[in-house]
Length: 372
Ligand SMILES: Cc1cc2nc3c(=O)[nH]c(=O)nc-3n(C[C@H](O)[C@H](O)[C@H](O)COP(=O)(O)OP(=O)(O)OC[C@H]3O[C@@H](n4cnc5c(N)ncnc54)[C@H](O)[C@@H]3O)c2cc1C
Image 1: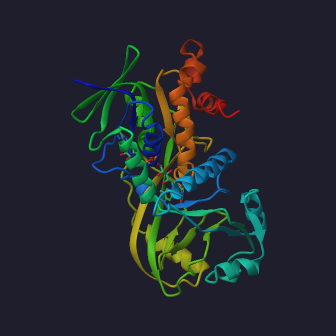
Image 2 (image 1 turned 45 degrees about the vertical axis):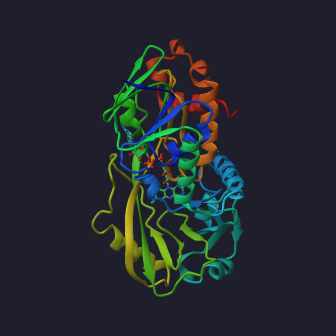
Image 3 (image 1 turned 180 degrees about the vertical axis):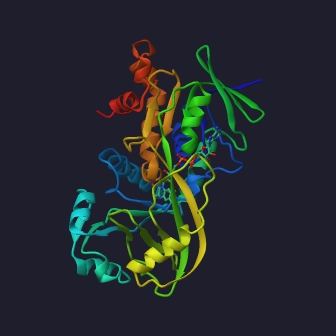
C-alpha cells in the first residue's frame, strides 16, 4: 500500500527541509531522506556564513530575501540563527574590483589589517568589506525547519533511499526503502544526487556537477579577534574565519567529484595548513576536525528551481552550489509559491517542448520566468 501526498520531497538537507517548512500546513507533504539522520551530507559541512555580496545577481537577491526571512523568525525565538559577522575580500586591485559587488565597500590596506591583524601585510594589496554579512547557526536553522515542518503535518521519513520513481496517471509513484508513496509533485532536493534521481525517474538529467570543498577547524597560537570578519582571497585560494576561539580554514578548492560521502583526501589538510601559514601569523598548532562536502552546480552557476519543462510534476530544487544556506529561505518561498500555484506544468506544456528543450537552458527560462 502506498501513502498518498500532494508533494513528496526527496532529500533532507537545507533545501528539502526549508521547502518542507514553507509548504507545511498548506498541502500534504512527505520528506524522504536516504540517510538515517537529516542534513548528513553537504548541509552538515558548510562554513555557515551568509554573504549578500557573494554570487551572481539572482543569488544575491535570494540571499537578501533569506536574511530578511530568517531575521523575522529570529525575533521570535530564544536562540537567534544570525549573528553579524562581516565578510572581507583580499587580493590585488584587479581581482578585488572584479569580485566586489555593490554590496561590498572598498576599504584601505590599513583598515583591513586593523580588522584582521594576523594577515601578513605583503599578502594582499587591496580589500573590500561586506558589512551586511552574517554568521549562521546552521544546526538551529535546520532544526527550526524540521520542527515547523512536523508541526504543520509534514511526515519526515529517514533511512529511506528513493530507488524507483515513475509517472503514473496524473501523479508519481515512488519506492523508498520498504515504503511506497504516491504524489502529484515530486521535488528533487537530492543535492549531489539530483541528476541521479532524475535519471531513475525517467527525467533527462541537467548535467549538475558536484565539486569538492574541504574545511577544517584548527587551534592557533595567535587567535583571531572575535570581531574579525570572515576573510577570503579574491582569487579563491583560501578563506578563514573565527570559530569560538579556534579558526575555520578552507582551501576553497573546486574539484569535480561524483556524488559520494566526500572525505578529505590525503595531503589536503597539510597543504591547506601550509597555505594559510604563508598568508597569516595565525601559527596553526593542530587540526581538531576536518571535513569535505560537495557543492553541486549547474553549468551557469545559478540554482535550479522550478518544474521540469517536460516531466509533469517533477520539480527541481538543486544546484545551490556554495549558496545553499544563504539562499535557502528565499528559494523555499519561491519554490512553495510555484508548487502551490501549480505554475510549472501550465507555463511549459509538454506538447510544445522538444527533447532538446529539456536542457539546463530551457529549464533556466522556466525557472526564472516568474521573477521577471
Ligand atoms: C566546505 C563548504 C562550505 C560551504 N559554506 C557555505 C556557506 O558558508 N554558506 C552557504 O550558503 N553555503 C555554503 N556551502 C554550500 C551549502 O552547504 C550547500 O549549498 C547546501 O548544503 C546544499 O544543500 P542540499 O539540501 O541541496 O544538499 P544536501 O545537504 O547534500 O542534501 C541532499 C540530501 O538528499 C539525500 N538524497 C540523495 N539522493 C536521495 C534519494 N535517492 N533518496 C532519498 N534521499 C536522497 C542525501 O542523502 C542528502 O541528505 C558550503 C559547502 C561546503 C562543502
